[in-house]
Image 1 (cartoon, rainbow, N blue to C red):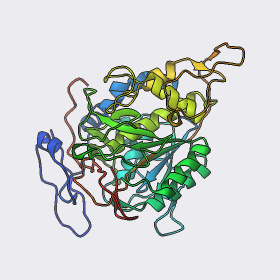
Image 2: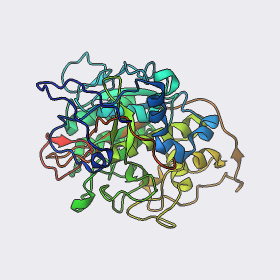
Image 3: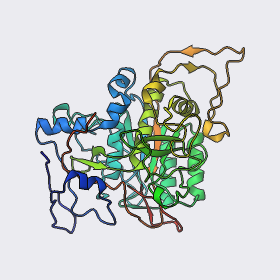
Image 4: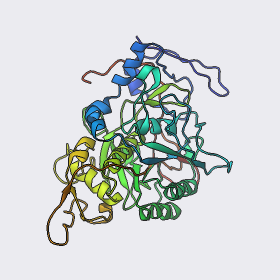
Length: 419
């Protein structure tokens, strides 16, 4: 049974109307989210549906992953619209952060964007699943902490605010920075901020964008050297054609039919490379928690070298170096005194790391404590296009069998949109 829960919209009295799920899966949101529906887990059966609909966790074998690492001790910065710290699945997970679009007292712990973008990214990363009697939505790194950095209140983002947010995250000990937005112009302030974060040993993760059907323009910060540029896949591990791709693609991750938290204590379903970036950020948090001695560069090398390769060996424009495999990344042996530099700053990211000075390769087991990650998942674009990854506040989904934010052409500083 599908459950439709109306929620209030600002300046609107419209209520949700039932739409068949297959239609919703084809539905592309344009400049408005009016009329869409949130869903809530009002009964135990509906709560189970939410948990079983998180197909990426099944694909990643999350239950096996969590025996090794849950991201404890890691801080992931979410550079976005803020995060609803009051959501039952994010209770206790959201640190005091900052905002760069107005009130200097802003701590980033609310999400007033109207589409819950930042809250959804945070849920994908660090949701606890504690809502609804333990059947809420669970992030891939449920013991990581989220550092919320507000750089937007709607679908437009100022790249200067993103640059400020990235620097703030790096200065506040986030080892992973998630940016789910981007611009087609390599803004110099944004590049400077990315380089600053890389210099602070942060893993910077950015979504590739959702304009793959319109020429695959290079997007930034995803296309900056050193940044993990994340493309999207579906539940069958196939490349999602809406995802942008190209020579700088680094890793692929789930991007379709993604369920996560919204800013009303409920849940949403959405498509977009924004959410794929969230999964890669969570995977980086898992690795840095399990191997606290690893540098950001070594963490990236591990994620790249253990990724599965649906597109074949080596690099291809769609999958980059492959679809992330967090379990393989956690189980792989570690090289002590290997190359610590960021492989994405080199011409050969898959090159073998340097051995110890006497030529031996030393392997170690899993370690303990933590690090913080900054996942760059904020897309800056001059004009808003059809919003592939926009939040579909959906009815409670039917459990899957077997188990968009867009980037467009950019120009001036403002009027950029998320992916």
